[in-house]
Image 1: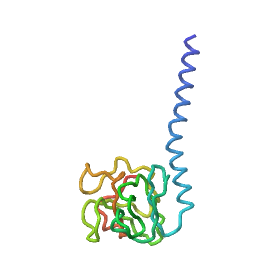
Image 2: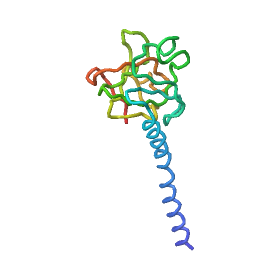
Image 3: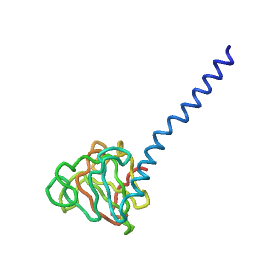
Image 4: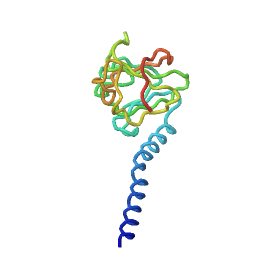
Length: 154
């Protein structure tokens, strides 16, 4: 009887090990699909994690997601929970928690080599740990990597 219980417990734990990583694999699959379908040279932002719920995309910069001009507009500000970088220039995308063309305030970057960040939870801007990237992006621009003081964790 103990052997049966032990075997059942072992199989249950092994099965759990297969199930738990599936969530991460699903996220990668969803973002991989989004990346494969994205236009070359563009930056994308998504309302949901795992590259779901496209807010917008652009091959240029936008200094204020909340205004009525530029590629991101109105309610697009402070909504991104995942982002995708399919740029072709080799530049990083620097995202900010502030607005304006002085490009000051907290920022972080996604390298060209990162492709996407499927979950921005836990990442913060250079302005401090309390300024979170998830639902905190208000503007972005393309920059050389040496202009970045912080990069998103992959």
